[in-house]
Length: 219
Image 1 (cartoon, rainbow, N blue to C red):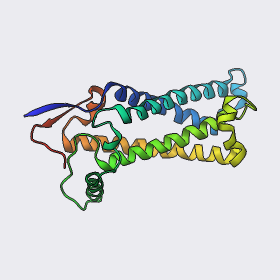
Image 2: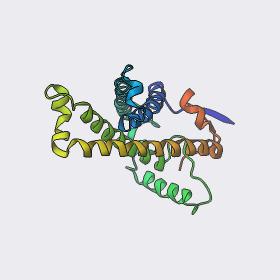
Image 3: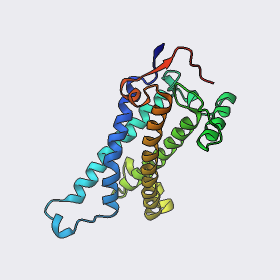
Image 4: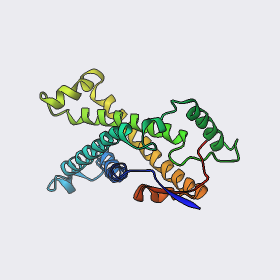
């Protein structure tokens, strides 16, 4: 028999898709800002770069706001969304992390079973949070470049004066490719998990539910 388990609550699901939509806007607009391949003669009447930068900034604010909401849910979410179910803070989670690494290295035949995130996925998502923070900080620092005073300059201008605009831009640009790599690997692993576990992993981020055997227990 199967039982339905509520894994992901509404705000987590909503901002997952907000992040996904924002990422598909941020990457192409950011790459265009870094390399405006359309000739100036073709765009001098349309203010193309201005619109691209505006779109990039709006998507960035949505992305960062979703990050803050998800951070809040680390402390008030259910057992599958709480930070304890993501960070390898307990001995059981650290052991599970080792087992998942061995499984993905083809050194374990049987896949460890988890209703929520497995320890390796949880650790990767925590690293993703650090990436988002770095990307947001460097992005806001670049956004503050035209301002010589005010809150943006006070909050993020110090990064430009300390490290220089070009190093900050290089970090921001390099992180973009890490996000692209993460997105590809993320989609692959979610599809793989859905096939191997058969719990409705793909649809769970839409409905919030997974369907598990009544006698299935996490390690």
